[in-house]
Length: 273
Image (cartoon, rainbow, N blue to C red):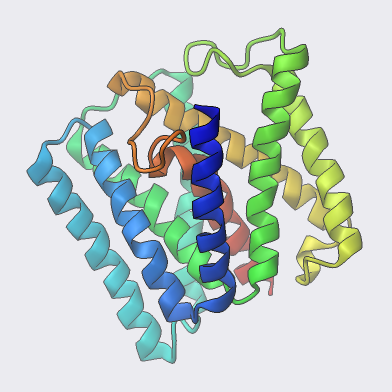
């Protein structure tokens, strides 16, 4: 299993980095679109929809992304969407993660409603896809923001394995502990110091005390995104959302933390740039 995970990373990560740094914005958006649609397919499976329902849902996501494309090019290019549109899309994502998602998990909802699951999947996938498109204008900064989530996850895992005693959410993900959370935040704090000193982040809001607070906030959102997908999988009775990435599971398994953190990062950068 470990070898499979390593081999998958060795193949996927260079392709992802090459696309991020060398593709034009349109090509980058196209590169990400199949991943978003695969995520829609997996979400449909978690929601209990049949093949026809998942195909239709993926088609709806494709139409929504096409609408953003058309709006962008009518405004002058993929990064020229009116600020109000970006704020509305990323803001809707943040509102979900600050209100609906915590309540959903706290009350142990097992959503079976097609409209609820359809809208939720839309709020998870479309804002993330668009955030990655918008933030690609500064690829190194985007990579630094995504690495924040990966470092948080790795630090949480290591600290949880070494010192984990108090369960974070035993009914959602029994392996996660509060010690893991504190380790994740400590890892992110250290990472922010390194990133800030290296000059990898150029936006003023990501520097100084404000930048530190934002990094910690994004890490917390990432933990929430991870927990939320774990709860959805638990209610669906599956361990992984899919099998697209050998040893790692499906698309949703790889982007769970990003669905919560990256739209929030894009909102802050769009609103305060």
